[in-house]
Length: 311
Image 1 (cartoon, rainbow, N blue to C red):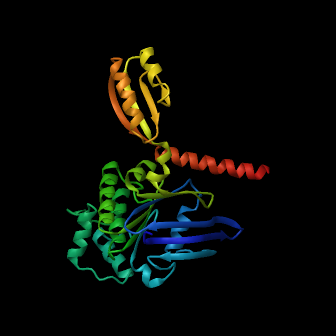
Image 2 (cartoon, rainbow, N blue to C red):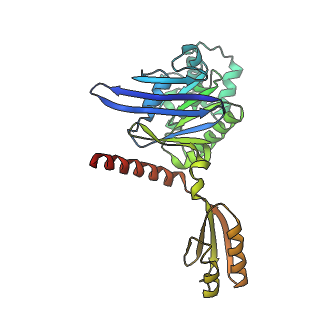
């Protein structure tokens, strides 16, 4: 069994007024992986992140963070954190923010280590010595990521890390997070940018109304939707259409869809198309997108809730 950086069970949070933000959350995040936490607004994502970082207290929580009970203060020294809507003293420079964060965490850093962090997040070359108040939102987020790494953490928790970051900045941030994973750091990302998480994450969890509705490796969650798509030029001759009818899921004017990861039926279809003189433009693997999986999960959860209310 894989060692987990985060292994929690039955996490609940009820605010005053009896508002249940979390309703028994259980998560396992393997060490050295990139994990994505997804969910619509109000699903409880930020509440869970704040419980893991002890910013708020849970109503109920059991489990571990980096092998120690959640809330163990010495263990939190091994955790880096970038909150959503991060704010730093506006009069400080980017370089000073890193030193400020190091001081708050009791971490000693030398100028060379600060320079290395600034280079890593693309904030060297002069910008690092300007005041934060002159920065764009994307520049603030880059400095925020640098300060989250100042303690050389084993686990980095990032709450909407690319909020306000332009496409180029998001590309560089993805590269940074992948490098951290390659170095054995666990990256826990809370984000609503599904396309970005799809290319980045090893595993995900989808929250809805304070509960986990889907969890696991993205490849496993979409395994049942794998198949192939064959793009052709022009309409299929009737002879070819009849030969492949039992092998395919659907045939449109210019595209043939097969379900399943087995390439055997695909070869038969391609042979039939070539024998009929059909021009094959493209053959590509297909699977359910993260966006489709997300929407399916949310709608499925909603349907189950409504069914329960009726019964």
